[in-house]
Image 1 (cartoon, rainbow, N blue to C red):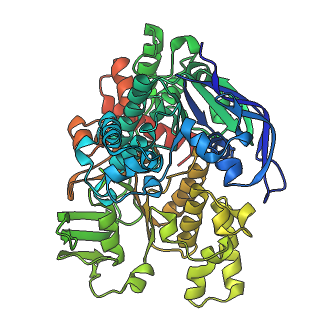
Image 2 (cartoon, one colour; image 1 turned 45 degrees about the vertical axis):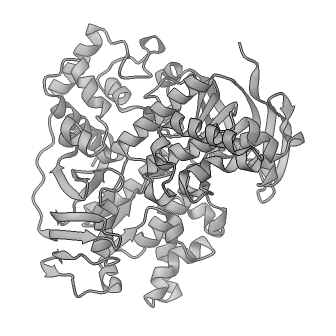
Image 3 (cartoon, helix red, strand yellow; image 1 turned 180 degrees about the vertical axis):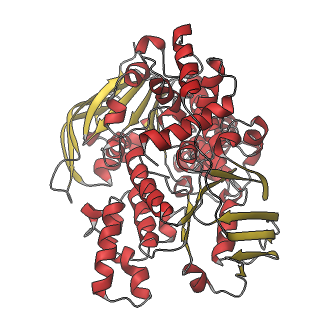
Length: 570
């Protein structure tokens, strides 16, 4: 067995700005050739642990360390961050934040250029790393010309060019569409097999990471390691549910059917979980005795787009002949590939861009003459990147900004801001500066800043990016409560779990066109739509097929209805 490449022993860490330690008595070993998933709810300490591994702690984020952390046999505190980077390569959650070159080739070459590697060897190493991750044909491309998945591959090539022993991935799925996320997990698996490096993945989308084998899962909460075990053992217990991590949907469905999920069944993958005939009969019986939900009454039309065409100044046609309608009180998901036109459609609704052809109507009235401010009185928009929205230093002021701009008094503003902060899980941070928050916490601040304005329609671009299951459930349950009172919710999302759990309808974009508009269960069981829109078939459908349920689409819909009615009471 390989010696540990990373070793924590009674390790603790406390930021200078905090009154309590963030990490407590960490005992953890990672060996070369292992693939380890570190998961846990937001604020559990997993990002801090990652920063200790890659040297950002204590060299960039200051604080007090206790115990021991060795990297390749040497105490991390005795190493510089440059020396650590020779052993540990990090792929950040935000790939844009990792680019330093004007082209793909320049970006990959950055590290060896700084080592004064000669030109012939430099070209050879860059080409080898680019080929390893599949971007060899994009070496002359600028970062802005790449998709999210391609950017991630370039970031990975930029660390592989130095032949590191540890590859650290910080939420690699956060900004990728389902199909690209699946490819990313496959790429990580392939790279590990080719290089033999240790792989550490920080991610809370457990089912997506388990698309490929993982040796161990480390579950954290409140700065402590609660479990360090195999995926099979973890999925067979209750620790995930107890700590706010969403278990795979097929596991939940099996439990609803009364199937005992044990480690010997190898439950870490729907592809090879061991189900006997009795287990499969229980699934079929559950489907047979669970009634479908009654149809919902049809509501008046609220938003209607007809024949939209929009092209950017560079000639890229983002939307073509797009027509769709939204009824009052809908909660729908807009899904599709990266660059399919989803965010562009939202910008047209808000007036940030103006279509070259077509019309958009709100409650029957053409919106063409409405200014951005006038549209904002009806439609609230939460952008994908929180950094594009935040303008205030303090959290309270950011959430209060819209109300102050509208001229409300501080006596009117305070109760509305405080209520929204509590609902969005931000009350403990109300006096904090925004700069002290994580990406996921900043996301919640931007959602709060729109919700406090009480719009009729809210557009959310990737509302759950960077959120753990507990926090996104809190936000979505609040949105659901508002939806029941009449708020129309449109979510642009790559999260198929979120879509299945909350959306009644999926609006599917591909290459600037609307290619499907149907209930979510129908979309995620249609192989052609899944392929064209870079979605991912739900594991519920695979479970239904394995258990011999005649109508897999109906099984998925029945699961959704059961969760809404019996579990969440909605």
